[in-house]
Image (cartoon, rainbow, N blue to C red; front, side):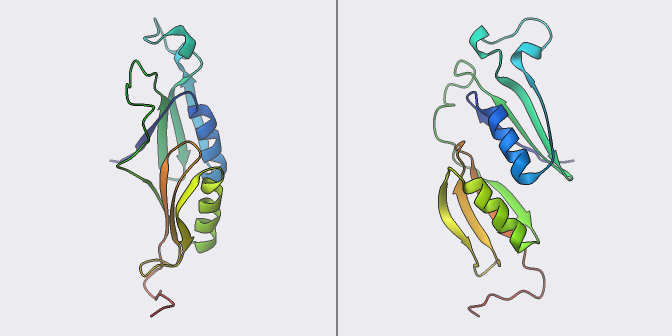
Length: 146
């Protein structure tokens, strides 16, 4: 069993998932509303929007879709109540991912050492998605302030 976060967008899902693939690596599989068999349930102006996007990287995945306002009436509201959490053992990789995800977004907590991690930070990316990036310190790691 696997838990996968699914993100909702308003026409920028393809751009967001191409960006996440560049930052995280992996491969995007996607199809637009126009590619669905039978009658599309959405307004024709949304036919190029993504009905489904799947980014697979390592043994992890991230899912997404563009949500027309008729289907998701609060889609234009800020995303809140969750964060996409990125964990790694590699401090340099965590910093690289944080900096890349922060480009064009808004940093909440700058990436740096904390009492629980050699490198942690949080941000909202340019697509409005909240992220936490955390480095696992390992059993022998101790904060430098200790």
